[in-house]
Each structure stands twice: as C-alpha cells, then as structure tokens.
Amino acid sequence: MTSFPRTVTSLACLSLGLLGAGLAAADSYPAKPITLVVPYSAGGPTDVVARTLAAAMGRTLGQTVIVENKLGAGGTIAAAHTARAKPDGYTFLIHHNGMATAPALYRKLNYKPLADFDYVSQVIDVPMTVVGRKDLPAKDFRELQAYAKAQGNKLNLAHAGLGAVSHLCGMLLTQAMGVDLTSVPFQGTGPAMNALLGGQVDLLCDQTTSTTPFIKANSVKLYGVTTASRLKSLPATPTLAEQGLAGFQLVVWHGIYAPKNTPKEAIDKFGTALRTALKDPEVAKRMADLGAIIPADDKLSPQGLQTWLEQETQRYAPVIKAAGQFAD
Ligand code: MLT
Image (tube, rainbow, N blue to C red):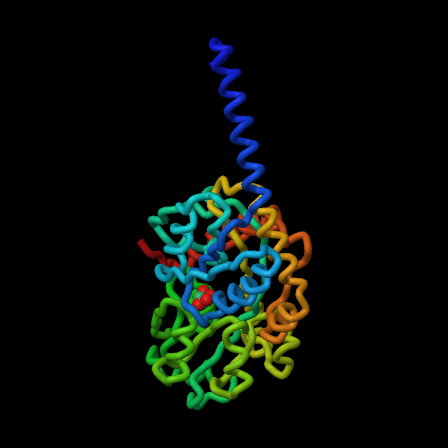
C-alpha cells in the first residue's frame, strides 16, 4: 500500500467516511431490540436474573432487551452461538462459572472463552442451596449424609449438565460427603426443580435465585447453604461447612459477554444500562430477597470480568482434572 500514495489517500477518505457512518450508528444505538442469550431454561436462576435485569436495562436503553434461552450441553451451545453472532451490539450473552469450567470439562469446545468474546461486566453473585424433595426422611444435612450412605448410590441428584454450576456443586458434594449419587441431567435447573417438586428426583444443589421461593413456601427440604457464612436472606439455615463439610464454599458469579469486535460504544451503553439496573431500588431489593449479592464497583466493568474469568479458568482446571469428568 505504501507504494501507491493515491490509493492510500482514497482508502483514507473511504475509512473516514466509514468511521463517520460508524459514529452516526453509535449515536443512534440501540436502534432495535437487543438479544440477551441465556444458556439455560426459562424459569431457572440464570433466566430469573436475566429477565429481571433485561426489563430494567430496556428502560435505560430505550429498546427492549429480549431474553433468548438457547439450551443444551451445559451452556456451551449458547456460548458458541454468541461467539459466532454478528458483532453489531445486538447480541449479548449472560453466563456464569460455566464460562471458566468449560475449557477443562469439554475435550472439544468449538469456541474459546478467553479469546472469542468482548467483556461487558460482571453481574451478580449468587449463593447455592442444597435442597431435597419434601418427603425425604433426613431432617438435616448430617442425617442426609447418613441416609445417602445407607441407600448406596440409589439417591439421585438433578443438575443442568456438565458445565452447569448445579453439576459442579453436585460433583463437589459427592466428593465431600463420600457418597455416590446417581446423576440426572436436565437442560436447566428450572425443569430440575419441577422434577424435585414432583418427587421424581431426590436432591438438587441450585442457586438461591431459583430455590428461595420454594424454600419459603416449604415445598422442598433445605439442607444447607454453600457460602462461608450464613445468608441474610435465610438466616436460620446453617452452612454446609458448619455441618461437617469444612471449607466447602461455592458462590456463582455471572458475567455479560459480546461477540469479539463488538463496537465499544455498544459495550459501553449496555454496561451502563446494566450498572443503572443494578442500582434500581426495585431490582436491588428483588435480588437481595433472592439472596443475590451485587459485586463491588471495580468488578462491574469489562476489565473486572476479564481478570476474574482468567483467574477462575486457572483455578478450576486442576480441580476438574482431579475429578476426572469430561465430555467430548
Ligand atoms: C440455570 O439457570 O438453569 C442454572 O444456572 C443451570 C446451572 O446449574 O448452571
């Protein structure tokens, strides 16, 4: 190119023209509804967070944020779909720890979590709860452990597939409890919870954003929370660590991603709408009532999510390798 100065000049004019068009587009962004991809079923905890935020974000953006549930393969189908979507600011993905565990869990992953996305922000942290069907005879976690041992591997545990946090929690639980539980996969913990309510499965480890209403309605048995200390939203419930599983701790974190090379203006506007939504008193109260915790301000940024994802990816790799559960 350097040997053809006239071409350089016309290319420069052309790119200035395109830049102008890009800025004009950025000024009017968003000009149509935006899709927020959720990797699990409607009614589950990721969906509850996504729909609560989408409604509030839509008010700031002046456009509808449509929640699209793209199910399957422990969240990897939704992530691959978003990685390949047009990077025009109209497709985003909300995902949790599964973004960090997938590279170690899946032998063949057709996207690269650390390379194929732009980062918008961390979103919300959510504790988990171990719940059982209402008619399980065990009254507390110690009784549950003894009952599960006495049953051999007959008790079953519902989860949302390899890569789901309900699966990760189940894997950590069976190791820590020293029992075998039969694994029953669903496409999200929404349907897994329905199966628990219907008595078709015995146990589920799921996020408080999904389980809290059922716990409060007394429709499930609650055996413990997965945090280091008790939750404000469920103050009478002991942690698993208090009940013999020393050091057991699992908190779900969420992030919002865009396909790589999404215009910065779109990332900034979507991120600002998210931060505004998290400060909305109604959203903040709903999240707090469901046990969710809004992360510190430095995490609510593209860099906050990127640094965290890199750390978590490194942290999980040896844990998953040791557990030896992989998918193709
Ligand atoms: C869901 O939204 O269904 C859950 O987040 C799935 C999971 O357990 O990871």
